[in-house]
Image (cartoon, rainbow, N blue to C red; front, side):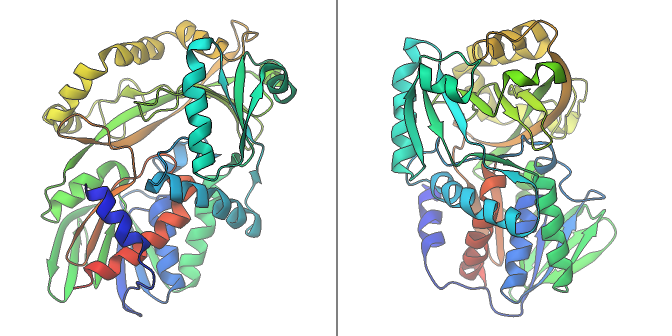
Length: 414
Protein backbone atom coordinates (compact mmCIF):
# COMPACT_ATOMS: atom_id res chain seq x y z
CA UNK A 1 0.00 0.00 0.00
CA UNK A 2 1.28 3.47 -0.84
CA UNK A 3 0.32 4.83 2.59
CA UNK A 4 2.55 2.32 4.38
CA UNK A 5 5.52 3.13 2.17
CA UNK A 6 5.02 6.82 2.80
CA UNK A 7 4.77 6.30 6.56
CA UNK A 8 8.15 4.57 6.63
CA UNK A 9 9.74 7.36 4.63
CA UNK A 10 8.20 9.98 6.87
CA UNK A 11 9.61 8.38 9.98
CA UNK A 12 13.17 8.26 8.71
CA UNK A 13 15.25 10.62 10.85
CA UNK A 14 17.67 13.20 9.58
CA UNK A 15 16.15 13.87 6.17
CA UNK A 16 16.45 17.45 4.99
CA UNK A 17 15.90 19.42 1.82
CA UNK A 18 19.17 20.83 0.48
CA UNK A 19 19.83 23.94 2.56
CA UNK A 20 19.09 27.22 0.84
CA UNK A 21 16.97 25.70 -1.90
CA UNK A 22 13.93 27.43 -3.36
CA UNK A 23 10.63 25.59 -2.94
CA UNK A 24 7.27 26.48 -4.45
CA UNK A 25 4.20 25.53 -2.42
CA UNK A 26 0.77 25.48 -4.08
CA UNK A 27 -2.04 26.47 -1.75
CA UNK A 28 -2.31 28.94 1.12
CA UNK A 29 -4.55 26.87 3.34
CA UNK A 30 -3.24 25.80 6.71
CA UNK A 31 -1.29 22.78 5.39
CA UNK A 32 0.39 24.81 2.66
CA UNK A 33 1.23 27.67 5.03
CA UNK A 34 2.51 25.30 7.71
CA UNK A 35 4.72 23.60 5.12
CA UNK A 36 6.07 26.92 3.88
CA UNK A 37 6.71 28.01 7.47
CA UNK A 38 8.58 24.78 8.25
CA UNK A 39 10.71 25.22 5.13
CA UNK A 40 11.67 28.76 6.14
CA UNK A 41 12.54 27.49 9.63
CA UNK A 42 15.05 25.16 8.00
CA UNK A 43 16.64 27.92 5.97
CA UNK A 44 14.89 27.65 2.61
CA UNK A 45 13.32 30.28 0.41
CA UNK A 46 9.66 29.67 -0.35
CA UNK A 47 7.13 31.02 -2.80
CA UNK A 48 3.52 30.14 -1.99
CA UNK A 49 1.19 30.31 -4.99
CA UNK A 50 -2.50 30.81 -4.19
CA UNK A 51 -5.25 31.26 -6.78
CA UNK A 52 -7.50 33.15 -4.35
CA UNK A 53 -7.03 36.76 -3.18
CA UNK A 54 -6.28 35.72 0.41
CA UNK A 55 -5.25 32.88 2.69
CA UNK A 56 -7.46 30.11 4.17
CA UNK A 57 -10.31 30.64 1.71
CA UNK A 58 -11.58 27.06 1.47
CA UNK A 59 -11.32 24.05 3.83
CA UNK A 60 -9.30 25.87 6.48
CA UNK A 61 -11.58 28.89 6.63
CA UNK A 62 -14.81 26.90 6.72
CA UNK A 63 -14.13 24.15 9.25
CA UNK A 64 -15.46 23.75 12.79
CA UNK A 65 -12.37 25.11 14.54
CA UNK A 66 -11.89 21.92 16.55
CA UNK A 67 -8.47 20.71 17.71
CA UNK A 68 -9.01 16.96 17.35
CA UNK A 69 -7.35 14.61 19.81
CA UNK A 70 -6.51 11.59 17.62
CA UNK A 71 -9.30 9.49 19.13
CA UNK A 72 -10.96 8.15 15.98
CA UNK A 73 -8.09 6.98 13.86
CA UNK A 74 -6.63 3.55 13.20
CA UNK A 75 -3.64 3.00 15.52
CA UNK A 76 -0.41 3.37 13.59
CA UNK A 77 -1.97 5.45 10.82
CA UNK A 78 -0.67 8.88 9.92
CA UNK A 79 -3.92 10.41 11.14
CA UNK A 80 -3.41 8.77 14.53
CA UNK A 81 0.26 9.64 14.99
CA UNK A 82 0.20 13.12 13.47
CA UNK A 83 -3.24 13.97 14.87
CA UNK A 84 -2.28 13.09 18.43
CA UNK A 85 0.99 15.01 18.16
CA UNK A 86 -0.82 17.87 16.44
CA UNK A 87 -3.28 18.27 19.30
CA UNK A 88 -0.32 19.27 21.47
CA UNK A 89 1.72 21.25 18.95
CA UNK A 90 -1.27 23.25 17.69
CA UNK A 91 -2.24 24.18 21.24
CA UNK A 92 1.32 25.31 22.01
CA UNK A 93 1.58 27.28 18.77
CA UNK A 94 -1.68 29.10 19.44
CA UNK A 95 -0.79 29.90 23.06
CA UNK A 96 2.70 31.09 22.17
CA UNK A 97 1.42 33.36 19.40
CA UNK A 98 -1.62 34.89 21.08
CA UNK A 99 -4.19 32.98 19.02
CA UNK A 100 -7.48 32.23 20.77
CA UNK A 101 -7.60 28.62 21.98
CA UNK A 102 -9.65 26.75 24.56
CA UNK A 103 -8.98 23.12 25.49
CA UNK A 104 -12.49 22.42 26.69
CA UNK A 105 -12.66 18.65 26.16
CA UNK A 106 -15.53 16.78 24.53
CA UNK A 107 -18.01 13.96 24.99
CA UNK A 108 -18.68 11.19 22.50
CA UNK A 109 -22.01 9.77 23.61
CA UNK A 110 -23.86 6.51 23.09
CA UNK A 111 -27.58 7.16 23.18
CA UNK A 112 -28.73 3.52 22.99
CA UNK A 113 -27.43 0.01 23.64
CA UNK A 114 -26.67 -0.70 19.99
CA UNK A 115 -23.87 1.91 20.06
CA UNK A 116 -22.00 0.58 23.09
CA UNK A 117 -19.74 -1.80 21.18
CA UNK A 118 -18.64 0.96 18.78
CA UNK A 119 -18.11 3.34 21.71
CA UNK A 120 -15.91 0.77 23.46
CA UNK A 121 -13.89 0.32 20.27
CA UNK A 122 -13.48 4.09 20.05
CA UNK A 123 -12.17 4.15 23.61
CA UNK A 124 -9.76 1.31 22.75
CA UNK A 125 -8.44 3.28 19.80
CA UNK A 126 -7.99 6.35 21.96
CA UNK A 127 -5.99 4.38 24.49
CA UNK A 128 -3.84 2.84 21.75
CA UNK A 129 -3.16 6.30 20.31
CA UNK A 130 -2.19 7.82 23.65
CA UNK A 131 -5.25 10.06 23.83
CA UNK A 132 -6.28 11.14 27.37
CA UNK A 133 -9.78 9.65 27.39
CA UNK A 134 -12.00 7.86 29.90
CA UNK A 135 -15.21 5.82 29.73
CA UNK A 136 -17.89 7.41 31.90
CA UNK A 137 -21.49 6.61 32.80
CA UNK A 138 -24.62 8.67 32.17
CA UNK A 139 -24.49 10.52 35.50
CA UNK A 140 -20.89 11.58 34.95
CA UNK A 141 -21.68 12.68 31.40
CA UNK A 142 -24.35 15.00 32.75
CA UNK A 143 -21.79 16.66 35.01
CA UNK A 144 -20.07 17.85 31.83
CA UNK A 145 -23.20 18.38 29.73
CA UNK A 146 -26.36 18.67 31.86
CA UNK A 147 -28.75 18.42 28.89
CA UNK A 148 -27.11 15.53 27.04
CA UNK A 149 -28.80 12.19 26.39
CA UNK A 150 -26.37 9.34 27.06
CA UNK A 151 -26.25 5.87 28.51
CA UNK A 152 -22.45 5.93 28.33
CA UNK A 153 -19.80 8.24 26.95
CA UNK A 154 -16.11 8.74 26.28
CA UNK A 155 -14.68 11.92 27.77
CA UNK A 156 -11.68 13.32 25.85
CA UNK A 157 -9.71 15.98 27.70
CA UNK A 158 -7.32 17.05 24.93
CA UNK A 159 -9.95 18.16 22.40
CA UNK A 160 -10.33 21.92 22.11
CA UNK A 161 -11.28 24.80 19.87
CA UNK A 162 -9.03 27.32 18.18
CA UNK A 163 -9.10 30.17 15.68
CA UNK A 164 -7.50 28.42 12.69
CA UNK A 165 -7.70 31.61 10.63
CA UNK A 166 -5.69 33.29 13.37
CA UNK A 167 -3.14 30.49 13.16
CA UNK A 168 -2.87 31.08 9.41
CA UNK A 169 -2.35 34.81 9.97
CA UNK A 170 0.62 34.01 12.22
CA UNK A 171 2.06 31.54 9.73
CA UNK A 172 1.76 34.10 6.94
CA UNK A 173 3.50 36.74 9.00
CA UNK A 174 6.35 34.41 9.87
CA UNK A 175 6.79 33.30 6.26
CA UNK A 176 7.04 36.89 5.07
CA UNK A 177 9.33 37.93 7.94
CA UNK A 178 11.69 35.14 6.87
CA UNK A 179 12.00 36.76 3.44
CA UNK A 180 9.70 34.39 1.58
CA UNK A 181 6.51 35.40 -0.19
CA UNK A 182 2.89 34.50 -0.84
CA UNK A 183 1.62 35.36 -4.31
CA UNK A 184 -2.15 35.66 -4.69
CA UNK A 185 -4.24 35.35 -7.84
CA UNK A 186 -1.87 32.70 -9.21
CA UNK A 187 -3.87 29.89 -10.78
CA UNK A 188 -1.46 27.14 -11.84
CA UNK A 189 -1.85 25.93 -15.43
CA UNK A 190 1.41 24.06 -16.00
CA UNK A 191 4.00 22.04 -14.05
CA UNK A 192 7.22 20.81 -15.65
CA UNK A 193 10.04 18.98 -13.89
CA UNK A 194 13.56 18.92 -15.35
CA UNK A 195 16.69 17.32 -13.90
CA UNK A 196 17.78 20.60 -12.32
CA UNK A 197 14.51 22.43 -11.51
CA UNK A 198 10.73 22.57 -11.49
CA UNK A 199 8.92 25.21 -13.55
CA UNK A 200 5.43 26.28 -12.49
CA UNK A 201 3.35 28.27 -14.95
CA UNK A 202 0.35 30.30 -13.83
CA UNK A 203 -2.11 32.31 -15.91
CA UNK A 204 0.05 35.41 -15.46
CA UNK A 205 3.60 34.33 -14.51
CA UNK A 206 6.23 31.62 -14.62
CA UNK A 207 8.17 30.47 -11.56
CA UNK A 208 11.24 28.26 -11.30
CA UNK A 209 12.35 26.48 -8.15
CA UNK A 210 14.34 23.52 -6.91
CA UNK A 211 11.27 21.67 -5.65
CA UNK A 212 7.48 21.81 -5.58
CA UNK A 213 4.86 20.84 -2.98
CA UNK A 214 1.20 20.53 -3.96
CA UNK A 215 -1.08 21.47 -1.05
CA UNK A 216 -3.98 22.56 -3.26
CA UNK A 217 -6.68 20.68 -1.34
CA UNK A 218 -9.84 20.57 -3.44
CA UNK A 219 -7.79 20.80 -6.65
CA UNK A 220 -4.76 18.75 -5.61
CA UNK A 221 -5.44 15.79 -7.92
CA UNK A 222 -5.71 18.16 -10.89
CA UNK A 223 -2.32 19.65 -10.16
CA UNK A 224 -0.89 16.14 -9.86
CA UNK A 225 -2.23 15.37 -13.32
CA UNK A 226 -0.79 18.64 -14.65
CA UNK A 227 2.58 17.43 -13.38
CA UNK A 228 2.25 14.22 -15.40
CA UNK A 229 1.21 11.91 -12.57
CA UNK A 230 -1.69 9.49 -12.81
CA UNK A 231 -2.99 9.60 -9.23
CA UNK A 232 -4.52 6.49 -7.72
CA UNK A 233 -7.28 8.70 -6.28
CA UNK A 234 -9.77 11.34 -7.36
CA UNK A 235 -10.91 14.24 -5.18
CA UNK A 236 -14.66 14.02 -4.60
CA UNK A 237 -16.19 17.09 -2.93
CA UNK A 238 -18.60 16.64 -0.02
CA UNK A 239 -20.44 19.69 1.30
CA UNK A 240 -20.84 19.90 5.05
CA UNK A 241 -23.80 22.09 6.00
CA UNK A 242 -24.06 23.77 9.40
CA UNK A 243 -26.67 25.43 11.53
CA UNK A 244 -26.10 27.63 14.56
CA UNK A 245 -28.09 27.56 17.78
CA UNK A 246 -29.95 30.75 18.59
CA UNK A 247 -28.19 32.66 21.39
CA UNK A 248 -31.03 32.06 23.85
CA UNK A 249 -30.57 28.28 23.44
CA UNK A 250 -26.78 28.17 23.57
CA UNK A 251 -26.91 27.30 27.30
CA UNK A 252 -27.97 23.78 26.31
CA UNK A 253 -24.41 22.98 25.16
CA UNK A 254 -21.38 23.64 27.37
CA UNK A 255 -18.62 22.30 25.11
CA UNK A 256 -18.43 19.68 22.36
CA UNK A 257 -20.92 16.81 21.98
CA UNK A 258 -20.39 14.11 19.34
CA UNK A 259 -22.32 10.96 18.42
CA UNK A 260 -20.68 7.56 18.07
CA UNK A 261 -19.49 7.58 14.43
CA UNK A 262 -19.98 4.89 11.83
CA UNK A 263 -16.54 3.19 11.84
CA UNK A 264 -16.79 2.41 8.11
CA UNK A 265 -17.37 6.03 7.10
CA UNK A 266 -14.78 8.84 7.48
CA UNK A 267 -17.33 11.41 8.69
CA UNK A 268 -18.07 12.00 12.37
CA UNK A 269 -21.82 12.57 12.18
CA UNK A 270 -23.83 15.66 13.10
CA UNK A 271 -22.50 17.12 16.34
CA UNK A 272 -22.69 20.23 18.52
CA UNK A 273 -19.62 22.42 18.82
CA UNK A 274 -18.98 25.50 20.92
CA UNK A 275 -16.97 27.85 18.71
CA UNK A 276 -14.15 30.08 19.85
CA UNK A 277 -16.53 33.10 19.76
CA UNK A 278 -18.99 31.35 22.08
CA UNK A 279 -21.61 30.44 19.48
CA UNK A 280 -22.82 26.84 19.11
CA UNK A 281 -22.55 25.26 15.68
CA UNK A 282 -24.53 22.17 14.73
CA UNK A 283 -23.43 19.86 11.96
CA UNK A 284 -22.10 19.07 9.52
CA UNK A 285 -23.89 16.58 7.36
CA UNK A 286 -21.96 15.17 4.41
CA UNK A 287 -23.53 15.41 0.98
CA UNK A 288 -22.03 15.14 -2.51
CA UNK A 289 -21.33 18.64 -3.83
CA UNK A 290 -21.90 19.56 -7.48
CA UNK A 291 -18.85 21.83 -7.41
CA UNK A 292 -15.49 21.56 -5.74
CA UNK A 293 -16.16 24.97 -4.28
CA UNK A 294 -19.88 24.32 -3.93
CA UNK A 295 -20.74 26.08 -0.68
CA UNK A 296 -24.43 26.35 -1.59
CA UNK A 297 -26.94 23.79 -2.87
CA UNK A 298 -27.40 25.73 -6.12
CA UNK A 299 -23.71 25.95 -7.03
CA UNK A 300 -23.03 23.61 -9.96
CA UNK A 301 -19.77 23.39 -11.88
CA UNK A 302 -20.15 21.14 -14.94
CA UNK A 303 -16.42 20.36 -15.11
CA UNK A 304 -16.38 19.30 -11.46
CA UNK A 305 -19.48 17.15 -11.89
CA UNK A 306 -17.98 15.41 -14.92
CA UNK A 307 -14.71 14.88 -13.06
CA UNK A 308 -16.64 13.09 -10.31
CA UNK A 309 -19.12 11.04 -12.32
CA UNK A 310 -16.42 9.79 -14.70
CA UNK A 311 -14.55 8.29 -11.75
CA UNK A 312 -15.76 4.69 -11.29
CA UNK A 313 -15.12 4.87 -7.58
CA UNK A 314 -18.03 7.30 -7.10
CA UNK A 315 -20.55 4.81 -8.49
CA UNK A 316 -19.10 2.00 -6.41
CA UNK A 317 -19.23 4.19 -3.31
CA UNK A 318 -22.84 5.10 -4.05
CA UNK A 319 -23.81 1.45 -4.45
CA UNK A 320 -22.19 0.60 -1.13
CA UNK A 321 -23.55 3.53 0.90
CA UNK A 322 -26.77 4.54 -0.84
CA UNK A 323 -28.79 4.36 2.37
CA UNK A 324 -26.31 6.61 4.17
CA UNK A 325 -26.31 9.00 1.21
CA UNK A 326 -30.10 9.12 1.16
CA UNK A 327 -30.18 9.92 4.87
CA UNK A 328 -27.63 12.72 4.46
CA UNK A 329 -29.54 14.17 1.49
CA UNK A 330 -32.82 14.10 3.44
CA UNK A 331 -31.17 15.90 6.34
CA UNK A 332 -29.78 18.48 3.93
CA UNK A 333 -33.27 19.24 2.59
CA UNK A 334 -35.16 19.08 5.89
CA UNK A 335 -34.34 21.28 8.87
CA UNK A 336 -36.77 19.14 10.89
CA UNK A 337 -34.76 16.01 10.07
CA UNK A 338 -31.52 17.82 10.89
CA UNK A 339 -32.94 18.92 14.25
CA UNK A 340 -34.12 15.37 14.89
CA UNK A 341 -30.54 14.15 14.63
CA UNK A 342 -29.39 16.82 17.08
CA UNK A 343 -32.16 15.91 19.52
CA UNK A 344 -30.71 12.41 19.76
CA UNK A 345 -27.84 14.15 21.56
CA UNK A 346 -29.70 16.98 23.33
CA UNK A 347 -33.45 16.22 23.52
CA UNK A 348 -34.42 19.64 24.93
CA UNK A 349 -33.54 21.54 21.77
CA UNK A 350 -36.72 23.50 20.84
CA UNK A 351 -38.27 23.71 17.38
CA UNK A 352 -37.04 27.22 16.62
CA UNK A 353 -33.45 26.86 17.83
CA UNK A 354 -31.60 26.61 14.48
CA UNK A 355 -30.27 29.41 12.30
CA UNK A 356 -28.51 28.77 8.95
CA UNK A 357 -24.72 28.99 9.12
CA UNK A 358 -21.83 28.61 6.69
CA UNK A 359 -21.06 25.44 4.78
CA UNK A 360 -17.71 23.85 4.08
CA UNK A 361 -16.53 21.48 1.35
CA UNK A 362 -14.36 18.50 2.22
CA UNK A 363 -11.82 17.32 -0.35
CA UNK A 364 -12.18 13.57 0.03
CA UNK A 365 -9.87 11.28 -1.91
CA UNK A 366 -11.65 8.27 -3.39
CA UNK A 367 -10.03 5.20 -4.91
CA UNK A 368 -11.09 3.66 -8.20
CA UNK A 369 -12.65 0.71 -6.34
CA UNK A 370 -14.91 3.02 -4.31
CA UNK A 371 -12.85 2.95 -1.12
CA UNK A 372 -12.65 6.25 0.73
CA UNK A 373 -9.04 7.02 1.62
CA UNK A 374 -9.10 7.13 5.40
CA UNK A 375 -5.56 8.39 5.99
CA UNK A 376 -3.36 11.29 4.94
CA UNK A 377 -2.05 10.38 1.49
CA UNK A 378 0.43 11.77 -0.99
CA UNK A 379 2.33 10.78 -4.10
CA UNK A 380 5.78 11.73 -5.32
CA UNK A 381 7.49 12.69 -8.54
CA UNK A 382 11.03 13.93 -9.19
CA UNK A 383 11.46 17.13 -7.13
CA UNK A 384 7.75 17.07 -6.21
CA UNK A 385 5.41 15.97 -3.41
CA UNK A 386 1.65 16.00 -4.02
CA UNK A 387 -0.62 15.94 -0.96
CA UNK A 388 -3.78 14.24 -2.22
CA UNK A 389 -5.76 13.55 0.94
CA UNK A 390 -5.60 15.88 3.92
CA UNK A 391 -9.11 16.23 5.37
CA UNK A 392 -9.87 16.45 9.08
CA UNK A 393 -7.80 16.34 11.27
CA UNK A 394 -5.39 18.03 8.85
CA UNK A 395 -5.84 21.47 10.42
CA UNK A 396 -5.07 20.05 13.86
CA UNK A 397 -2.11 18.08 12.51
CA UNK A 398 -0.87 20.73 10.06
CA UNK A 399 2.36 21.58 11.91
CA UNK A 400 3.21 17.88 12.13
CA UNK A 401 2.21 17.19 8.52
CA UNK A 402 4.50 20.03 7.45
CA UNK A 403 7.52 18.43 9.16
CA UNK A 404 6.87 15.15 7.37
CA UNK A 405 6.41 16.83 3.99
CA UNK A 406 9.69 18.71 4.34
CA UNK A 407 11.45 15.51 5.37
CA UNK A 408 9.87 13.71 2.41
CA UNK A 409 11.26 16.29 -0.05
CA UNK A 410 14.70 14.82 0.57
CA UNK A 411 13.60 11.63 -1.16
CA UNK A 412 12.61 13.48 -4.34
CA UNK A 413 15.44 16.02 -4.48
CA UNK A 414 16.81 14.53 -7.69
